[in-house]
Image: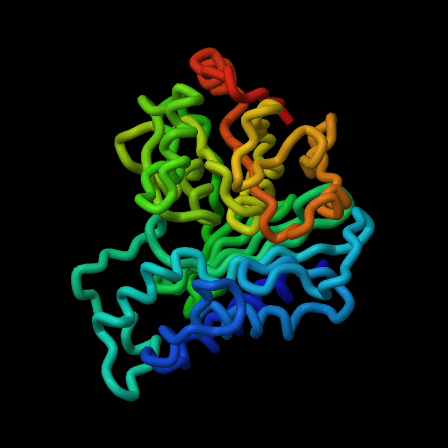
Length: 324
């Protein structure tokens, strides 16, 4: 697998997105009920550059080809074309002018304050032979790339690609837990945090793929971050975290709703989980799901040293969990 090819693929999607006119970017497009043109053009650009015949799991279109059979021997690509697209859409609508391109709009500020932890990103993750091989993530407003593979983790800005900066995973003591917990249209997110007795440490953040950056030395705020949590979010939003976790040998904890308390959003169960007993990934487990792109997991990633502090305070009456 060529990491450089994956980087170039994401950069091309970024460039296509920047050339969209702002009024076009905010139009509805084919995909999910909330898919926008900005999602669709970035996703299409990535799909067109990936190797024909590989299986692709996308945020907007689902699984390509639609009759795909998942196998651990295949290379599987997971695409989140624009995470936080809703926030980007709001921004573009506020500053849109006739003929203005997304590239020009992003040079404006208005009342938005984009940073490494609160910006729309493009994310591409490759899985092969039971492991996440790489995650490529690009911060759209900042033009900053993040690359995580088994060998290294690094970042650079698009216009200075030769100036790579190494990223280190941190080993901070247990502190806050960034997660998605406070969405008006999804009250079960907050309810689940309370069920697990995590309300005192959970901190609501919007980002999906780039939530992992809270566990790196890119985050230098005063509050210690003990781990991050996927609160039942779709696989394209968190699968890339595992490239970082693998490189730094971090702990992964997956929770399962106990029988009789299943929720309509269909969290992973021990039977349907993509994780094996030894912690590797059995991607063929996605064949058990009618809609594999909507596979959801309640999953935490953290330094191994924080496991005891995390699990000691859990309330698991409605859940079981497994340390991977």
